[in-house]
Length: 211
Image (spheres, rainbow, N blue to C red):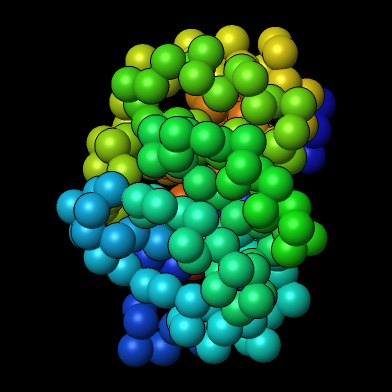
């Protein structure tokens, strides 16, 4: 069993004190920092860009896990890589030639993740599984935080674990109730936003999510 890693999503942090929020979750036991990037096209919301990633990079030594929920990710890989990302994850649905995106991320010497939406067939990522370091299974429709967990996605995680031995990340509706479910099915990287940043005791929540 792989170690369970907790990646707080800063989308739910208090942006008026973002640097301190990141320091606080690191002190509380977080393993990664998850950065949700939305463009208003691939998903109906706009969040942050490379400038923010660059500004928070000096704040923490934790791995920076950047999730691109954007169209034409190839246009922005270089900017996010140079800003300080450690893992860059793109959506299989946003790219006609995912192998080229993988090569581009590798060119900048970053780890590669590929993400799938709840309704996307797992077969869509099978051709590139050998090329990536991580698969991110969305358990809500990407675009906004605070959504309800989609339990139908549990079977997808279980099927993926049977054929993929590297990191399986899960994002969406993760809390103290749903985290044990996704871990039991084979996920080992847990993204949580509202459940961590909406609490008064980050360390307690992170410990409970880890199981």
